[in-house]
View 1: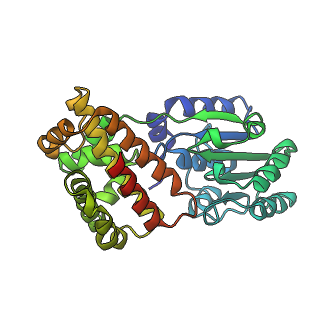
View 2 (view 1 turned 180 degrees about the vertical axis):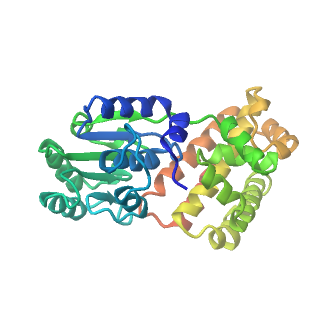
View 3 (view 1 turned 120 degrees about the vertical axis):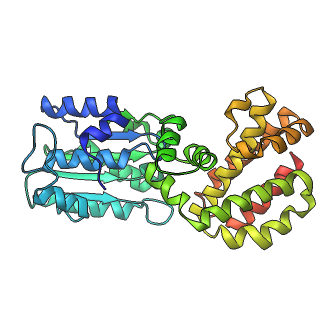
Amino acid sequence: MNKTWAQLEELQPQVLKILNNALVKDRVAHAYIFEGNRGTGKKEVSMLFAKSLLCQNNHGVYPCNECVNCKRIDSGNHPDMHVVEPDGNSIKKEQIQQLQSEFVKAGVESNRKIYVIEHVDRMTVNAANSLLKFLEEPNSETYAILLTENPQKLLNTIISRCQVLSFRTLPPAHLQTRLINEGVDESSAIILSNLTNSMEEALQLNNDEWFGLGRKLVIQLYEVLMNRPHQALLFIHENWVKHFTDKAQNEVGLNLLLLLYRDILHIQIDQEEKVVFSYKKEELKKDALQQSQKKTVRSLELILEAKNKLNSNMNLQLLMEQLVLDLQEG
């Protein structure tokens, strides 16, 4: 279900206030960068903002959600609204060129045209240069919304031509409470609220048998690394790669592993109240005594490095094998 302006304003009040003022004063920028962590509402706000620009029956700045334009945006087939997503691992020059060719044509429904580029930080160099040229020569009724979780990877020349709006990360306690109210057990709610900012994604994971088994496998891998490290490679071969089969699934697994090692660190620095795997706390406390804080920090760095490699073309099994070998060495 698409969120209303009021619902998104509750989650991202500062961003919605800025967009509201821009619409009221008719000072909408030609290009925006929406930056923030996954699950903070960037895509939902971009769709809502597009509706406000194209809606036939706006209530002030608020789209009606009922007219043909609003419904076409919801269904993803509005002729003057274009969404570009990575083709594989990256956004390629040809995708930006195709977008440019579409925008040479007159608007079908109105003079306004809007494009949203998801994961804009994944553009190839040639695609980024093509986009830069596009941004340098905007049509009066063309609007760009660039979405990213990694604004530091964008060209400064692109950033300088956009208005940057930062989406705040919602505190885990906020989502945790909502999940418990939806009937999710407390221990799962704590873990899920630390994995994602998205209520929809959290509920989907909670109801997914794959996630339940995956959570158990991550704990088993952690226990192997702590107690029987010489068996870690075998565990990757016989268990991990059969369950975590693509990049998205491996990212979930690595995020869970990261939370376990972060729990160790929280115990070591006397912040037990922040432990996420609360039902494993006694075991984690024993593990925390068996290794130095320096080694825990190094383990966290290694897992983060592995996560960054997920966006490369590195073989997933090789990536995990290298990670467990590095974790063994500390």
